[in-house]
Length: 197
Ligand code: FES
Image (tube, rainbow, N blue to C red; front, side, top):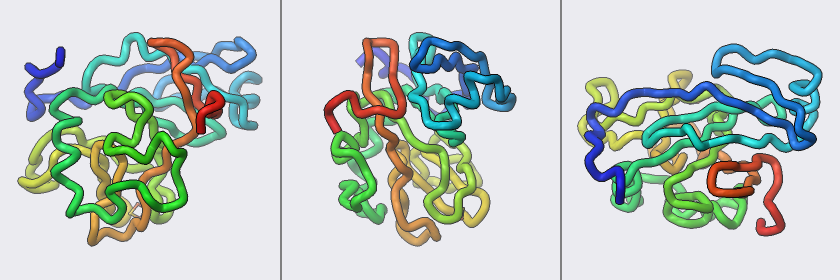
């Protein structure tokens, strides 16, 4: 695959600024840390689907959008990120996403419609904090066996790069995959299943 040369240990923690467009076509620019409650944003908070342009989402990057007032992450996973997932199964509580929490297209080893693009609700399944994206491999604070994922600082829950929860942490379930589908190669609509749940 095209990203095989990426050095995962040097992967930067990049969070893209995000363009959010409501289904009706109203547009609002947001950043991960500044969310303006314009009228269109209020409509989004009420439940309207959110259209996400992923054309500038580089390998390894996380793009944050807001949907129904919740953070939703879209991650462009590299080949190295995907390759790390199968070997983690025996360390996870629900490696096959069998809990009745997920859309059908999350029940595969990548938990996604397309392997490299992961879409998750960014809320810890323990008590609702928002975990931190930690894509680097074996950082000192997370240990030599860390292959990348999310760490929830509130009570120490850990999730892999498919949002699957590890054993021996407080959270009991994998991070939620919201309804979504690809409108085209560069556009994801979050909030609807597109007729294929
Ligand atoms: S809220 Fe994330 S570990 Fe408790």
